[in-house]
Each structure stands twice: as C-alpha cells, then as structure tokens.
Image (cartoon, rainbow, N blue to C red; front, side, top):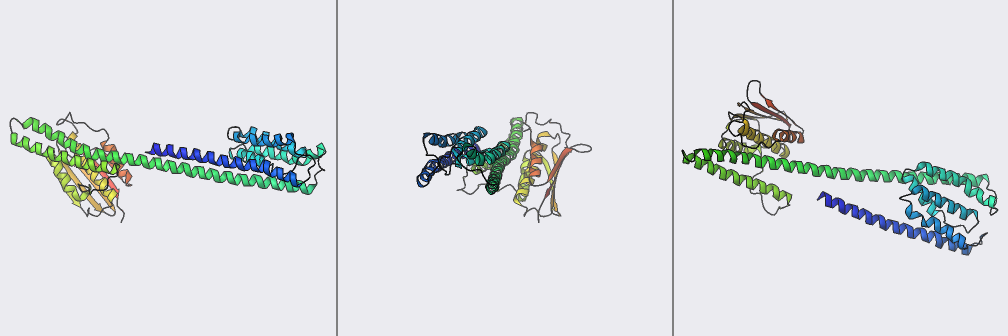
Length: 389
C-alpha cells in the first residue's frame, strides 16, 4: 500500500510539474514576443525589429526548457542573447523575463557563483555595451546605482524563494519519513500480535498433542481431555487470528467475537497455561482493571509469552506470576523453577524472537524489560511499565 501511494504521489508530482512548465513557457512566449512587438509598435526604436532581433528573442526562450539539466549554460546563453539584443538597440520590452528565470534556476539549484558572476557581468554590460556600440548614451551614476539596487533586490527575492522551496522539500521528506516509520511500526506491531496470539496457543496445542499420543493407549480418558484442550485452544487461536486479519482488512461491520487481551483476563491465561502442563501461581497486588489500553495489552502479551517460554523450555514447568501496580508503575515478574533444559518438548519450535518481542512490547510503552537466568536455578522475566495517572 505504501509503495502504491508513493507511485501515485510521484505520478501526480510529474503531472503537476509538466503543467506548471507549460503555463510558464506560455507566459514567457507572450511576454517575449507579444509585449515586445507592442512596444515596438508604440515607440520609435533606434533599430527596427528585424529577423535578427526575433532570433535573439527566440534564443533565450528556446533554451529555457533545458535549465533543469544545464542551468549554468542556459543562464550563459540567455545572458549573451539578451545583452546582444539590448546592445544593438532593438525595441525595449520585457525581454529580461527568460534571463531572470534562468538566473533563478541557477540560484535554486545551488549554482550561486555562476548567478553572482552573471549579475556582475550584467551590471557592466547592459549599461555600457549600448554606449560602446553607439546605440545609447553613457550611463550616469544614478542609473548605475539604480541598476545595482535592482539587481541586489532581484537576488534577494530569488534567495527567499529558494529558502522556502528548501523548507517545503524538507517538510515533504519529513512527512514521507514519518509515514514510512508509522508503516514500519504498524508492521512490527502486527507481527508481535500474530506471534503472541498464535505462538502461545500453538505451543499449547503441540504440548497437548504430545500428551494425547503418549496416553492414548494406556489412559484414553486423559488423552481425550488433551484433545478437548487442543480443540478449545485451536478455536481461540482462529478467533484471535481472524480479529487481527479483520483489522488489516478494515472489516468493522461485525463486533469482535473475543474480548481484547487484558490483565483483567489474567485468570483465563493462567488456566490456559495450566492446561499446557504449567503449574502457575498468581499474585496480583493493586488494581489492574483500569489500565491504559496500550500498557494493558503490552503487559498481557509479556505474561503470555513468558508462560509460553516456561512451557517450552523449563524442565520443571512451575511458574510464579507476580503483578504489582503502585506509584504509577506496573511491575511484572514471571519466575520459573526450571533449569532451562528443553527435555520435555525438544521438537517444539522456539519462535526465535520471544524475549526480543517482549522487550519491544515494553519499550513501545516507555518501559523496560530484563530476562535471564536466576541466581540458583530457573529463569526470570522482570518488566516495569509506566502508567500515567
């Protein structure tokens, strides 16, 4: 979706650029030829507008479309043709428009040295070339001062335009970068949700399937209980997976079939862990029913993943879950008594990013998470999540 949006935006920018170019060139042609012809008709120039004059006017217009690729050369061509037209005494008019556009293009594209050089050349050539060619009188100092002020003002205006364009481009880049970052964060969030929702119940299904296979001949009644657990776990996994996919597809015409994961449902999570063979003790201190949604979800997923890891890896699947909410901080501790050996379920996939995913969960709400072996034996997960009042 982000790629398609980027392609559409690029196409729209190209269309708008071509449209602006056509409008600009149309205005320049009207000014260069139409306004100059009107000026020659109403004033008596020193030199009539002949074929040479029209060609000099046309050169500065014809090179303008190349200014994006060769701004310096276009500026030089426009300067030479305009100065020649001016020096030969052809009718005066708005023939400086192409030269100003070429000058602005040089400044905007960063060729300031060429732009300033052209201004200095123009400051000398335009007043004195007609005098040297005998088409005008020598310029006085008021005219020189006025020309210098006009050129400085022109350069200042172009610099202001360049600064605003740079700010606009920077804002556009920042907006695109923000959109990409949000899309990446959303993909990571969806990946974590899928991992947390599916891996936990798939672990339970895998464990209970192994129990059923082991007991189906000797104790069929316990094997039947394991199959019932598999059926319930697979149904819950499908419901939660469907709710996640529904969000991706913007399916909001139906109410969700399962409540949102929350510490208020921690008892259900503990029961599911017990069905997978983990002896869980739960200790809750403080109110966990009115937590912010993102903190509540992160805490639930951290406990869920921790219990999944206990079922996968601990040779003694005994766990203590301690949840403490006080002083605007939610503390989570999941402690197991195992040694970390995977003796019970060596064929169970590990997922590979359980602890990293928990750290991402904690970091996403401004919290921290540590996980590692305990002093004597077992494994400990400790998380601290800030809770705003």
